[in-house]
Length: 306
Image: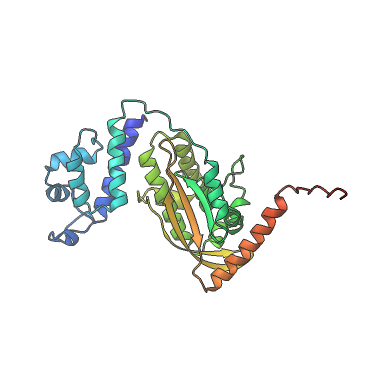
């Protein structure tokens, strides 16, 4: 299958999946017991978007390249897409327009030293940088202590670099580590789906999705749902093998790095005065001790005779 036809399939499946999620009652249309579809019909979406049924049917078949942004926005409103889903639809359209041209290959960029300095300075927050494929490309000592099961997992690549999606879906310890493993699975699949919309020509991403689809029934199920997530913040509950239960707040910040690569700085912090803060402090103490032990010893010169 060539890339352009693959893109059409993504557009079709995404629009069909969004249409199926909306009930007629939600958009003020009459309901009938004789309806054969759970969601909206194509002609109903067309009316809501202000276009003909034939035109919308063509759009849903993936012919999106010549569609104006105003019309895409009208379809997004009709389907009640959230901001992330809307961005994904526009990414698919952009990719479809450039389908006849080979885009420049996206190159992975090295994380600048000053970003690593920033991570290392955050001694009471677990902090790491992940790319759009959920590779962890930089981290601080507390992140490595907090995510010790992932950093020590057999899913780590040959360079010693963990991948969040690979750990979550393929490591048998992950459901025990993530107290909300189902939610972690859903969010991770949706993050990868958004990245696939931004970068449909990323071979490493396609290989990762293929690997997860082959080896994880849970990933296959979630990938088929076409859910999309670009921003991801909230509460993470972990069952750490050394310090026990942790309830942490995590935030994602975009890092402005060269090229088109997407990098996010992810921080985990504990609410002050909680048991989770005490346990995170304990982990931070262990992490600092191990980090110092790993550093080369510098012998001070002996003072000479006065």
